[in-house]
Image 1 (cartoon, rainbow, N blue to C red):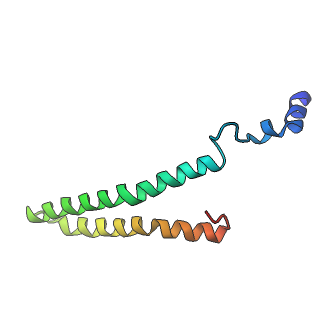
Image 2 (cartoon, rainbow, N blue to C red):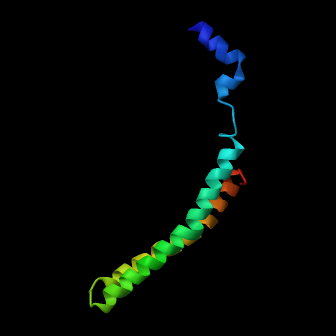
Length: 98
């Protein structure tokens, strides 16, 4: 057991799982940021629009709960659209500064 611990102590690449091929570290952070921006920039607005269209169709058909659904969809859309601002604020408060 002491030999394994000594191996990790003397070779920091194994001990700290450094980047061995562009997978971790900065490359992973860039991929995650790209995926996040695509989700927030394209998927979220599309889902919001589809939700509003669905609620409008329900309202046109005379559904009594359509107004409540529209309010919930608008609230969820506002929270989703404000998500990048909140995330940036939290990152700046913590000090990571992406």
